Amino acid sequence: MTSIRNPKLWVPTLYLAQGLPFFAVAIVANQMLKSMGVPNDELNHWTGLIGFAWVFKPLWSPFLELAPSKKLVVTFFQIFGGLCLGGVALALQAPFWFAASMAMLALVGISAATHDIACDGLYITSLDEKGQAQYAGWTGTFFNAAKFFTTGALLLLAGHLEKTVGVVTAWSICFCILGGMMIVLGLYNSWSLPLAKNTVSADTNAAAIARTLWEVIVEFFRKPGIWVSIVFIILFRAGEAQVQSIGPLFLREARALGGLGLSTAEVGAVYGTVGTVAFLVGSIAGGYFTSWLSLKRAILWLILAVNLPNLAFYLLSHYQPTDLAVISAALSVEMFGYGFGFVGLILYMMQVVAPGKYQTAHYAFATGIMQLGFVLFKLFSGDIQIALGYQHFFIWVMLCAIPVAVLSQIIPMAARPRTVVTLDGALQHG
Image (cartoon, rainbow, N blue to C red; front, side, top):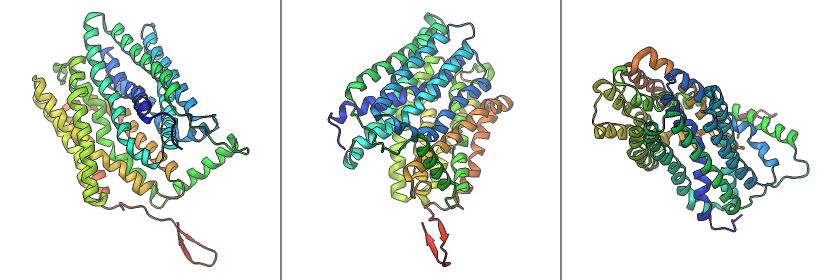
């Protein structure tokens, strides 16, 4: 089905709205809590728990088909997510600010995860295959534009406001800005988005959807070698999840405590500019590298690309340089490697785990497991860092690459058909 409106009018705003709440929870919340004096272990426990919304979203995704249209779901959760982000700003002013802000961020996470489902579904159903391919680059560009804004411009603003109006007011203003942006995007998208009606048959109801969901789950866990694949997906993110959680906090930590003592604004300048650009360049390069070499031959190099550049963090923790240019260069290497190697996990899920009768649903399950890997290692990253100190923590992170690197060399890198035995004893593959 082709959209009545030009996709250029709605694809950018659709995926900008997908990225803003995700990075608000994944990155901005950590920086806000760090400024409020929350310890690394405690803040990662709570923001990690909120990340479970993206882990379990495939379980409620089929029920969204009961809504009249995907447009309705998308715009509702954009506006609702904006109100929840504004709720974080209000929660920070309360005496019980920590519990209140975590509750509001949890609502942001659930809203954003639900929005993701309808957002991708609307994109797929509103464009034909040619259109999907044509605007695929736009989706990634504007999703990462949200990262550029939240980790760059917003942190720069927060750093400035912390010095002028105080920490609490500074972050309240930042979350008000995020909430306002989401509400404006929701109102604009209520005009610009194609309707994307859900075609629900007369016998489709919540019970029927639940039965289908159960079949999808059962088929997923019947896939040959699925448990090994699950272990591989989770371990792939072991080092990366810990670095992405602790790295920005290490930059903020006082030099006397082993950090680099950067301000909020300086972290924004590093991650939101050169870091984001390096990640995007690495992602593009990793895609071309893998298509040239094939996933089987490239996978070890991709795993090393994600993990070896973490050496940059160890060197930063050892030498504690003060030159922002040196720090930016080191982090650019790390972010390039992260972007370059992460392609391997995406392709593994697409080409090895997803194929079969329920390919789209099983890819969604795989992405949930991928997020589970991130959340599990994020949850305990603060505890490990406090126990080991920053230098030894970054050594530990590099060692976390060994199990997945070994596993990548002994498991298949292609989809394995499921073999069944028929009543006459013949073998069939499916």
